[in-house]
Image 1 (cartoon, rainbow, N blue to C red):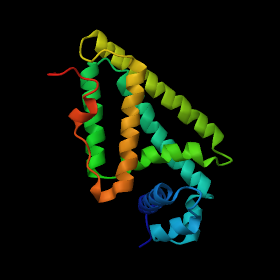
Image 2 (cartoon, rainbow, N blue to C red):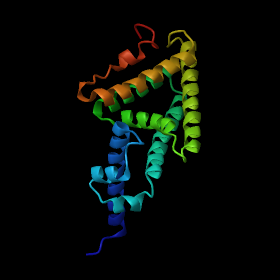
Image 3 (spheres, rainbow, N blue to C red):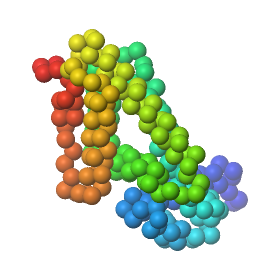
Length: 203
């Protein structure tokens, strides 16, 4: 029986997931510059011709994956700008980071992929990198505003809110890199360790 339109779409999506998974692994562990299209096709278990049906260039694939990661950052900004208790917002965010880091490598890989985009210097990356820097600045600002609100409510320790936001994301980014480097030897700190610098003792 001929395949239906839905079956073709399922096959197409399955192939794209294979490509994304293979590319993510290679970009993170080998770097963008050291990864070629044949490597991605081989790791995905598909022909290079099939890969080219989905992506004309390695740059196109890389930028689509970075765009996906950036959308995740934008969702975090919206979440941080919600009307919920600052302490509850941070607790939920840190719990999600902890769970993602414990369950798999996607979050760590996405964070590293964003940094690689800024460092790769590909010809078509400048516009996307401008967006990454803009979104990162927006996330830092939203987090600093949340921390200030928490300080005013007596939920958070005193201190420069922007500096505290920078420290927080530096810790998360550093943990992502350690997870990739240490592999099975990596031990993820508990949520209470990640928030110890921010939450007042006994709360």
